[in-house]
Image (tube, rainbow, N blue to C red; front, side):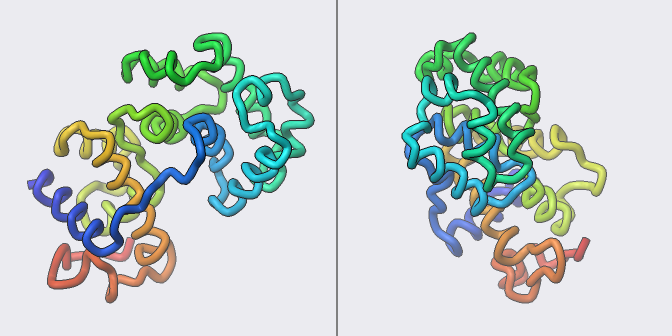
Length: 222
């Protein structure tokens, strides 16, 4: 039942919105940096910080690794909490260079479960950030859970209010094929739905793509 429902949601959203082309970045390393910078802020602010690094030619593993933390903090100021995020980036860059010599290809060779475990040991890297790096930068078949995902599923009664990150992720991993392209597109579509229709306040349920034609009509405004 859940497999059928999730598949219907995906098809309905894909037919309505089309391919999202997410994550917007010029390189896997840029995705990694962006995944850390986007913590507790909106994407527009992250784009400003990314652009500032690009303008100085710093958005490369070796150059960013050698950049003093205080200077790094100044460049990423638009992303908010810049001192904290500079520290988190420094922790990740240390891990990336010490474990993989700053080599994306080498990092990709590590099995998913082991690599996820290692990422979660890096200070400042939580489950959503780790999974974003794994899926969008390293092409690993893992589903990213965020506030949009939880909100949509909760309002359509597919999860309980106390569902954890792991509970929600398990729903996708157990009821859909382990396909990174599917997980990539599905997550991006849920984000789009959350931003455009399934708003935190005053959700646009009457015109929501999932509410049309009686599909998932038992929506509750949680």
